[in-house]
Image (cartoon, rainbow, N blue to C red; front, side, top):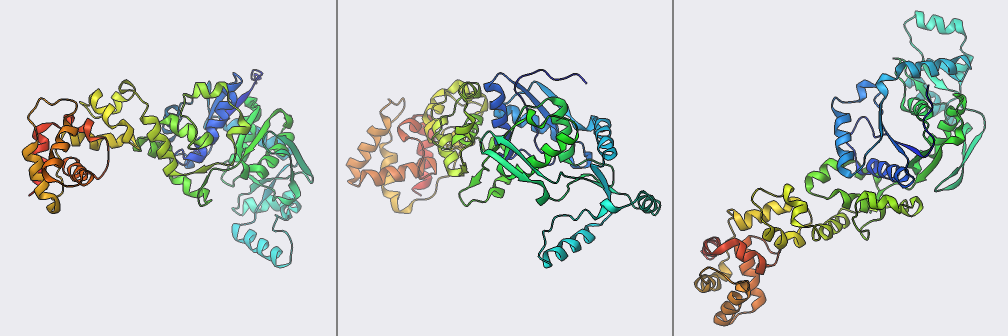
Length: 444
């Protein structure tokens, strides 16, 4: 096999079973930035060795999500075409006694674990199947049973200099020998990932802090496969949390959902890298000055904070930058009027209906008299830029009522909303005909 070129090499390996949620997106982003910061190589790997766990069309959807976020890659691997390579690596480990067959059912394993706990022992697998003789294995297979295969971990500790956490040790004797090959012949992710990382010459892996034990296992597996375990630099970053500390709540927040809501990709990237106080910038610019240690500080995700950052970012976007994503017919004057009031770009649809469509305002019985006065004082078109302030001043002068109260009533009658963009900008867009119709409805 041709050896990969030297230099920083990372892999993006999103889950094959689910849409790309924020936790996975953050890890993909961090790995990508590590590579691009050092002019390195990015491999996109679809972990689809088990076809039953990989829905049709999932890989294409993941690629679309990653590209929308701003990530690219130099090479793509799919695991489903590498079965012969995994089988060859497994056979080598079997010959060396590092993969051994097991026959216990899940019920038997659960009973053994519970019994060990009752006796005050560790629930770690007891390696009973290491005593299985070839004759016993053949008899079991002849009787219709198929073995699954565990990787025999070394009876030692493994350690590495973690890029984020510093010197890290994992005691392998405290971990059950992991299953690497199912009875149906399919390989588990831990095995295929290690073989792929070795063959692809991966040099950096950024992963969650909950994967420290998995890294210990991978290092032992790489050694058993004949690879140099020190060739990969690992960085274990704090998990993305919600304000309540429940990371699982984030699994329902996918890139696709946020995209549909109108959140900007640069906003998501900025928030994942540092929270609400970050400025949304193109990822190429971010990569030039990327510092992993600063970017992977304990991160808390808050939807309200994301929306505030998105509002701030939308407020700085030009009409040309958003025109393709606005409703048909939207004008630059409309965008300049509403952009500072949007949490999500999708909200522009509602405001376009306000200025160019049909809405039914609520009936405001309490303000009916002043609304009738306002209708009578509504000036003919064409309107000057000062029409809102001139009109409001005239209504206040004639009614003798509080200006803030009148302005609030007029906003509700004209837009159907209690708050939103400045009426000084909206009223000329709404026009006299729509304004008069809505005032009449609200005053009925």
